[in-house]
Image (tube, rainbow, N blue to C red; front, side, top):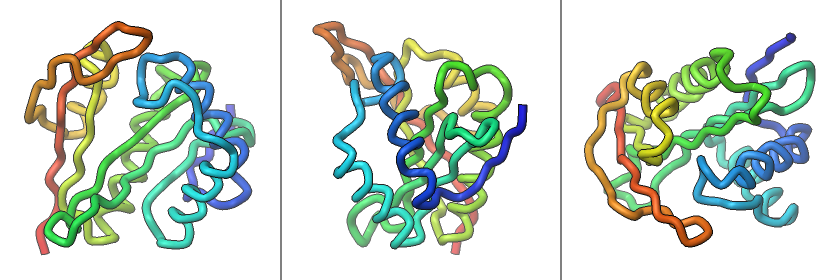
Length: 166
């Protein structure tokens, strides 16, 4: 297995959308249950690259197997906050790739001036919650029925990691 973690670039866009769609269709980990259109994904990924925002991809033997991003929050008073998103295709899980992706994304986010990183994790995903805790995130809240997929509700937790101050 040849693993490379690098910043997202246009050459990754198609594979990144495929990975997003694969994870989304599992209906367990993301707010999406399928990837947005190719056009919308491309516009989103271009905005990340054009604005210098933080997103890294995991390439396993040259194919996109996952991503992690820390994207800015809207509003001037919250400009120091980023929201973390991560996903791995099933074959890339439980190999330490998620932790490597998060480490790279978090380090890159601190360099952009982010000083707080937030995320939301479903309560029925204890593996992800444990990873976030190992990376230093703390649980700040519990949100009953915050996800609904195919008529079934799931709770979630909000978590955050504090970084360097200005």
